[in-house]
Length: 440
Ligand code: SAH
Ligand code: SF4
Ligand code: F3S
Image (cartoon, rainbow, N blue to C red; front, side, top):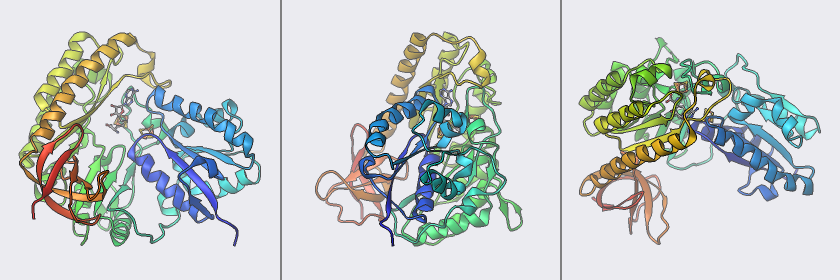
């Protein structure tokens, strides 16, 4: 047999890209590639890219610039670009960086083997179609190798919401759900290989409506079915849109013990005028009422969100409404961004907020969110929470895992193996993590 070729994948962007990278590595694994942790000894380098903000997209070109030297020294090295920049820019990437051999959009990953063969044969390989077939169905089956205790599992992809700032509907295409039986089979397989926690992924995961044995299933129905898998201890899902937070899903947070008390529910802004201009189809008030209902079902749930400051035409008063909403909701975790103009999206054509204004608002919002995050973390001290241990910590004898609320927790002299789920008494709150001791 030939010596295995080495594959280096660098992943940018969201969790879905992390999942896709794993699947691409498996698919290319079936073509004789093994993964390497270093680009220097790779025969193929794949950049799995993100297009969500201008900076994210620009990173790809600077990385390609850096790789040029490697390619010059090793002309046989193949360089590929996958992900959302590949979808958005297609052949333009090869025009800007002629050393790129392969460009593949997120909906065409099952065609990687043919594309790889073409690139290896010295031709340029490009595929950014939105084909009819289910790529996940046709991607190589996962080998039965053991793996760590947590895994992502994509159940829904694409988006039909068309928020005025966002490229996702263009890069990932229309909203599609995978059939429930396939998701369940994949989940069982993951559990057989050592996985204890699954995070269901989708750009609009709570819009899930995959075909089940008896008609379409909602995300809540899928979660209840997953909860029936022995050995699967925890279920999470991300990312949700407020308008798809159905009653059965809210209820599941109260009734499904395996569904973790953490919910990422982006609101983007607190001003109704701006939300309307963003095409979000919800108001600040409807979002706040929704969070109240979720908290009624699961009082201890930790809320997390996404925010954009400096969306076109945002005034100081609009921004103040975002701060007011944050004060009212109280987040345990949050991601906030300066609005970034994305060519081809409706908001790109509108009156832009000056850069220094955006920076100032971001700083003020982040100060508030950081305070709330700290408070939520500090409030854990003294409590006993479930921790799923993932790996050894930096100190000798220390183990690290995530709490039910997704906080990183370090336990000294834990004496437990990765994959153990145990109650931990939280004894301290550090900068970005908690310290605790086993409570058994
Ligand atoms: N599907 C998810 C989020 C997808 S993108 C949802 O609907 O919530 C992740 C986050 O990136 C968004 O929630 C938004 O806050 C941010 N984002 C998207 N486009 C952006 C842009 N043009 N500028 C700045 N932030 C953006
Ligand atoms: Fe983008 Fe999310 Fe809006 Fe869809 S719902 S357009 S993914 S921000
Ligand atoms: Fe980025 Fe594409 Fe995810 S644009 S955030 S990698 S869906």
